[in-house]
Length: 308
Image (cartoon, rainbow, N blue to C red; front, side, top):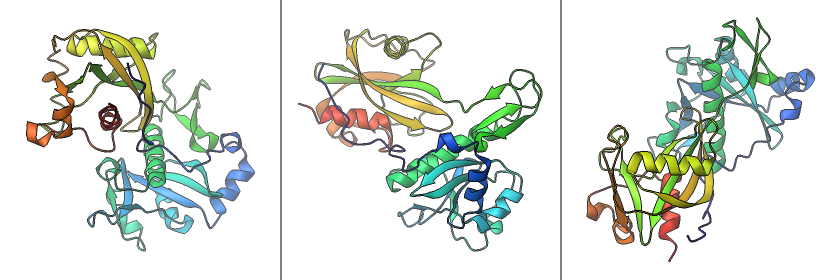
């Protein structure tokens, strides 16, 4: 197979945040960060992020000052230190308990928006920070109790970990690894259509979660075989992409197809077929759509198309 490097950073990568993981348990540092008038707070409301300019097609993240964020913190939702951005402390704060948090932010003109709908338009650094906040707050709001004994958990590590108040078990944010792969055979590649896709005409790369005791290459071969019946040979890593929707890391690969006949798993795919470069270069003319531009699936396709 060709060696196909990543042409540029994937969406939600390239974070400007220094996560200062070695200072999260420093109470004096945390107190100073919370009191810093330059601190920024990224609010998350029911998995949505605060932005302005969305309707105009020029979205940008809205970060709150400590004074503006106090009302949200008083509502009792979880919060956590994300790190330092050009020496400014950055926090995430969840305000999902409020039916409508905007009235609490009287000086803020913006809307809570699904990050995925505008990620391709946001400055890369902002998209990465909002994704970080969204993923961490999703974990915090769903990990209030210990999975070992069922007791209430208390935050520690500046909100980046939880400790069981009963048995003392330590809990850390979960990220589920998922492989996503473009299967290539000669001058064609394999794409599938899932009934779960919001776009009824979209065809995308195959993907699936890594199982316990499985290498990434083994996961690629297993998932392709299960979903399409195609045998896979060489597997080549391309790049990765955080995907906190809700809690995954997408690990991108190219996979060498060794067979031609597609036999789909109807529980996973509605259709799967081989596409030529000409078809992928003009999908509208051939009656299908490609994945969204902020996805690693689209990047895998575009980088393969750019090779000769």
